[in-house]
Amino acid sequence: MVIGLLYFCACIGIALYFQRKAGKHARAYWGAGQTIGVWVNGFAQFSALVSAASFLGFLGLCYKLGWTFTSIAFGVSSTLGFVVCMLLASGPLRRYSQLREKFTLSNFFSERYGDATGLATSIFVLILFPAYIVPQLMGGGLAGAYVLGIDFTYAVILVGVVYVGYVLLGGMLSVTWTDFLQGMLMLGFMLGLSLVAISHFGGLGELIPQALAVNPHFLGMHPKISPWTYFGISVGVFMFALSSPHIIMRLFTAKSVRAGRLSLAVTGGTSLVFHLLGYIGIAAAALVLFPQLENIDNTYIVVMDQLFPPLVRGLAVAGILAAIMSTTDAMLLAAGAEFSNNIYKRYFKPGASDEEVIRVAKVVMAVIGVITITLALNQTKSIGVIVGLLVEGTGSAFAVPLLAGLWWKRANKVGGFVSVVGGFGTFAVVHFMKIVPMFAEILISLPVSLLCMVVGSLLTAPPSGETVEFVEQLHCGE
Image (tube, rainbow, N blue to C red; front, side, top):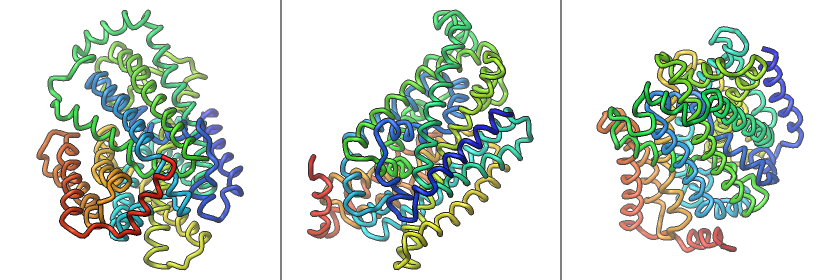
């Protein structure tokens, strides 16, 4: 309990430290003054990616469906997504934030494709990101209840209050630095428990055969899972790492274009090690120690409880809390930025000062915090399933218009709008109609988004010379 409370106090302490530095201006509050270096940003981005799903839900899917499913879908695919983002998106986006003093994806879409596309992007972010926060808080309830010895309800509320508090206080600076520290904590305890588990059983050569005796498909494709599910979730995670607005916001905080690119290399490397090496030891050990585990979201917790001494267990649960809070804070900040900058200031009060916009964002973030806490107390689905679907919805909406907006000069307002709306809308329709196996929705929605972009752009007037010049400016120095 003491370790958990100290962890919460540390998060608030960091926010208080950075409160004054965050200031009352957009560049400081949303962009951290564009002062973040390679390693801090790299681990902060990794931390924003690794959520309750990574520690609890996806690791539970690894236990149930096999290491191949999660290692390819989450480890390899996320790394490839960050690499492509590093090569194709990070430089132009960092230059955009420098040129325009803007710090959200919808800001870029508004300028590239027009206000309608920017508004649609903001609306989808305000739908997707609060929904994404809900399973994080569910994980926070599981971990908080374990380490603090309190009821799940109170644990969810406590985690929610703390993460909302330090986002409101310190903005992007406090979020980045807490996420940097939390990223190191997460990587250390995921790899640490995996290595302890492997050592406990005498090495992988001894552990894996025992795990295969419980789940013969642990290292292969599960016969009950469609190959389209494997392919779909891999594509979804790839597109999410490439284009998620809360990851894009991190690029705007980098000291320079080069620092932004190198930070993505750090993020990709840590994600690969985390998911491949971290998952194999823990999931295999869970199969051997608990072959009939009912709640697969508890895979990490039960193995930790079995193999770690009490003091280390407390620190390890802090790692789970770190995974939860590092994603929720980044998404909460992104949602607040979307509403205050791209809806309130653009449509309700164009003359609002930076100070007023930040004040409105804080109110919105507090409201989102209350709503997501309430929803988390009443949600029963698997954390991994919820997050997997939200990941795919994000990639369906934003990946194609992001890359086309940066690299295809012919992309215009119509193409951008129908690509965003068509991609997200198709994903939602396909999912709720259950047309394809779970996680395969993006295999339909992504091509639809691409088709909408190409057809919409080619059948309507080309973008203005000013827009083409704007795109060219983003590549100065390439």
